[in-house]
Length: 85
Image (cartoon, rainbow, N blue to C red; front, top):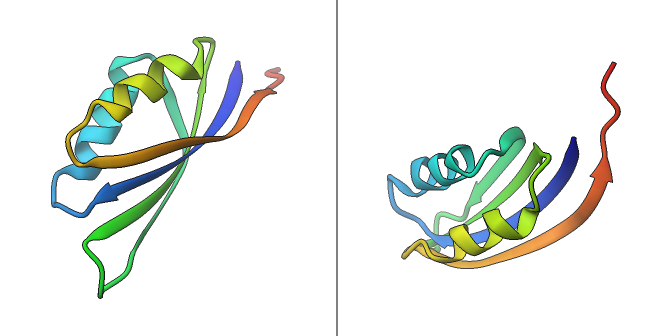
């Protein structure tokens, strides 16, 4: 399995996290870690998402960029291999 870390910038709305997680699951990725930071004086939210999959992370990247409330997605760590027992 490959592990990938994504940094997502989005407009804060109640359903944004649900949409991101649904797209992630539908594209065949498992969430390993999630960190979300919302500044009280801002309409934006920063989400750090770590996912694992055999699939290319570019598939997930392109689908997340299509979401209306997502302003940007950056692939931070690419192609880190996980060894499973």
